Image (cartoon, rainbow, N blue to C red; front, side):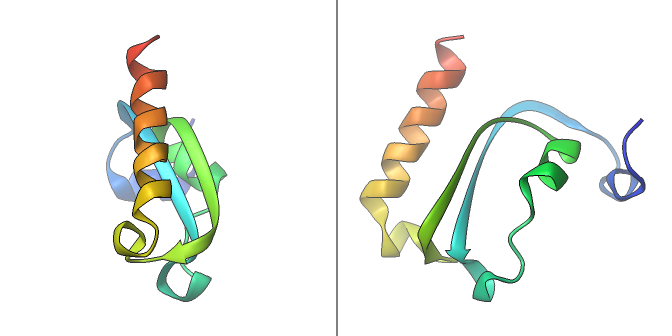
Length: 78
């Protein structure tokens, strides 16, 4: 049974999902914990970046692109 907060979202997202968390995203105060995300989505790939924030694609584009490619390789090679 999913936790009470999972009911707020309506249903579990079963599509393979990648989650990139950034230390400075919205002040570093709102990044959802991995365990919370796992209760809502089918997390197949997770990366915590010690840098970057809400605009990570502008702040660290190479690192983010590598992470996205890693996610797709993982999901599509399965």
